[in-house]
Image 1 (cartoon, rainbow, N blue to C red):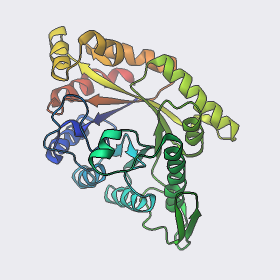
Image 2 (image 1 turned 135 degrees about the vertical axis):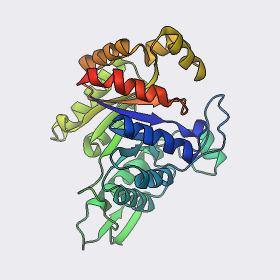
Image 3 (image 1 turned 45 degrees about the vertical axis):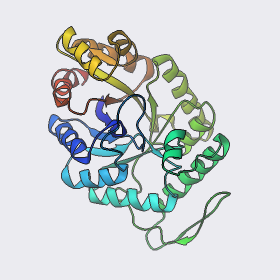
Image 4 (image 1 turned 90 degrees about the vertical axis):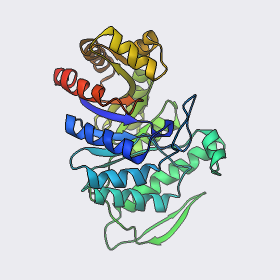
Amino acid sequence: MDLRIFTEPQQGASYDDLLRVAKATEAAGYDAFFRSDHYLKMGSADGLPGPTDAWITLAGLARETSRIRLGTLVTAATFRHPGPLAISVAQVDQMSSGRVEFGFGAGWYDAEHAAYGLTLPPPKERFDRYAEQLEIITGLWKTPAGSTYSFAGEHYTLSESPALPKPARSPAPPVIIGGAGKKRTPALAARFADEFNLPFADAETAVAQFARVEAAAAEIGRDPKEILRSVALVIGVGRSDAEVAQRASVIGRDVDELRANGLAGSPAQVVDRIGQWREKTGITRVYLQLLDLSDLDQIDLIAAEVAPQLD
């Protein structure tokens, strides 16, 4: 069972804050450090000092870490054109010696699009564009060196691209797709995903969605076992009930709700909860949503008292 630290810096974090968390993540032995790709806070957080760009952040972390994998949950297709995005991700993969994983989604948060002048198309067009972007980005990465790549779609056209630079990892960084869409999302995952992620869902919802992805993969002749299953869950782990309550309070969550919908409680209780998830859903990876980025102690606690019991 891989455990990965997942952060939401749009809620309020500088690059230096993220660097401290990433270094703590690496030192504690986690598999990876991930961040969201958002430009606007959500809820009551102040969002200060303001947003940080996901791929600029990961480029910096690529040079200041040595082992952990680095990625996004998830980059929005509405934020960047596919050609330049393929270049950015490939460059960060080179800068990290092949440690990038590419979480990619269609985009959804209308307020941030309005705040920063980004276009959020209607759902059908959004998914059409997203599908084309997946085709283009992976196509550019996988085009053999010395060859060119062309694409003619409804929304994007590329003509004889040199398809450079190449990622360090051949033929391409792992692609992570996720979400609860019942038709197009599983179909796109079947074609493009190395990993399918269910964020902040209950186990029953995850079971149903993983089954849809499995069926979509089988329909196109792909072995469903090639697609790793993962979930993202908020954390509130403590050595005592008082510590759990304190951590829940800091992130504005009710303890009982956090226990029901996330990974909260003592290390033993969280080990049991992850075991239940694994038994019900077949997951082999969990993204631990750390909302209090000053709480490096929780990173160390989970590494010391939860992770060793999951082997």
